[in-house]
Length: 490
Image 1 (cartoon, helix red, strand yellow):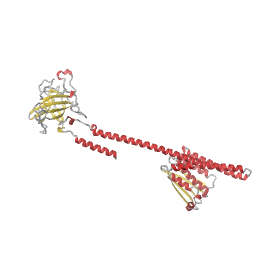
Image 2 (tube, rainbow, N blue to C red):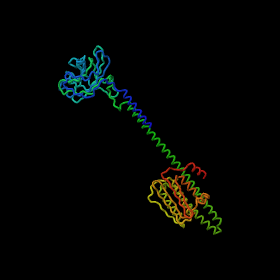
Image 3 (tube, rainbow, N blue to C red):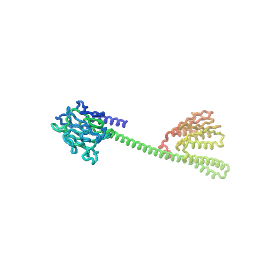
């Protein structure tokens, strides 16, 4: 919005500036006129402008010419000429005897001219030296166009001061003061006028006159392309500045995003370390402590074979649980486990081992065309622990004949359902005595921590259904400060 406002403001300002600095053109005729055998010619000015012998200001005249023949082979007169009534005044073009770009009807005669009142014009493209006296000027040639600008400084009661530039520089920054000496011719002439006539007499096919104008300043004829104007340069500069600013902003935003991602990665790593430490403490620590206690009981009751057998059975069961817990921790921290397929594969492995040898039949309905979605370690681990808790509760408390584990994914949404046909429970029983259903509160907390939704339905005598829905594309919903506190207390 701000950038657009700047551009609009600059454009409006530039338009106003262009309108206010428009050239002071007193008369102009931009059309092309073919002039051939005109005699004295006819007026094209139409009494729109005049200067007499009392004038003291300065005027600038411009005319563009296109000779249709070569003067070297077809002598002729061609001119843009000022008239006062029927009196010939200053003429610019090609004098009859000069055979080149020249002025005639002047008060002076050029140093290389043979006819009085003719004055050759200096040119940046003079004829070769072997042409003798003709050398200082340029011959008009077919298809070689030229622009002539001349200034008349009117002198009251005397001859006027004339300065002529043949094909001058009219580009940006050009003035009558910085034109090349080779383009500048000065002499005196009577330039009073109330008419302008275009003339051609003699041989050849005539001249084409175009882009004629009278102005009060040389600068009025300077051609400034729009890309050379100050407003365009200002606009480009503002655009570049805006572009640079936008680029810097984008770069800074990307740097900030990278820093944020780095911070999130470090935070995730800290959470994962805290979780691993918690698992080692809770799972392996408690199991190893139990194994140590049972080993001590075996040694203490070595003389009682019945007690030793009971302790050994418990010791074997604890060792199996320790191995399973260690296997689970290793799977959780392995980098190649951070995929949805890895989670489903491990759930299959865990369910098979858990219900192996159990009277409860475990059926799996797991999709084989799951999307290749990455899973952060904490989200993957919490999903597994929810499923583990549901399966463990079914094995220990439901007395079910069959349990079904189904998993499906639509887009980035994962849905896992654990259903059994066990004895179920009433919701009121759970609310009154949470300990009756081990870990149900933990399951809900874990689901909330990963931004998932956990629905649990159970009817006494009709079994239990646990449905977990998780958006795998969603952000991380853990609270690092709380997890760190748990780790410190642990």
